[in-house]
Image 1 (tube, rainbow, N blue to C red):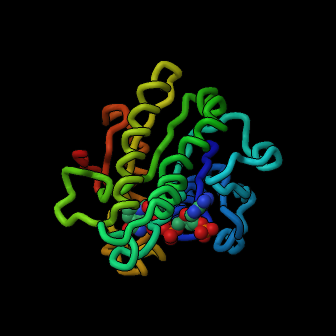
Image 2: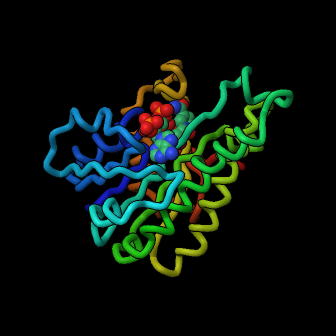
Length: 225
Ligand SMILES: NC(=O)c1ccc[n+]([C@@H]2O[C@H](COP(=O)([O-])OP(=O)(O)OC[C@H]3O[C@@H](n4cnc5c(N)ncnc54)[C@H](OP(=O)(O)O)[C@@H]3O)[C@@H](O)[C@H]2O)c1
């Protein structure tokens, strides 16, 4: 099994990498600029690949990815400016909105455009890591304009991918990791990365239990959006 993961050098991406290595998969762990935590892993099944999702993948990196891809996890993401200092109605800027959108939503499109033929060859799975913060139904506290909007857009993009790629045998799902102790949450989450990833990978394994493009939490529960 060949698994491609973006933003794999730390946090949830690194935990996804460790999970799939433990499952015996070949893992193509993509990092933006610094392999970081990937350098501490010594498995022969691991290939680290440089890929900043703000840009088209380089020819060299593309050549390191396998000809058939069973699972793609679009995990790379940023929060953007801090909640109070930069994402309130008063202080959110167009620059911040567009930067967060570019990475959190357009990034997944860039990745899928570049490698979808290889996913089709394997009749594989694309899992897009969004956030409950992108659910309108769940939004009772407002604010967080850039992050909420970009993650909501990713849910919609993921649904379109699910519809468009169904005829090719590719299944697409959107995931919510829970509130997880990573750098993004300044380690303030409720669960650790291994618990979150274990749950999300169970959703991926049971993908046929869900509608194409469903938005599902690490706890296997559907998320209304
Ligand atoms: N933690 C949570 O509670 C939580 C909740 C809901 C959703 N999520 C989502 O889960 C995903 C992983 O989050 P995390 O908590 O693990 O965050 P994290 O610890 O901040 O890690 C983010 C990862 O994304 C990578 N990344 C950022 N910009 C990138 C780019 N342009 N190209 C490639 N990689 C890039 C980072 O690479 P660098 O190290 O190079 O910056 C890092 O590997 C994100 O999409 C996040 O929005 C997290």
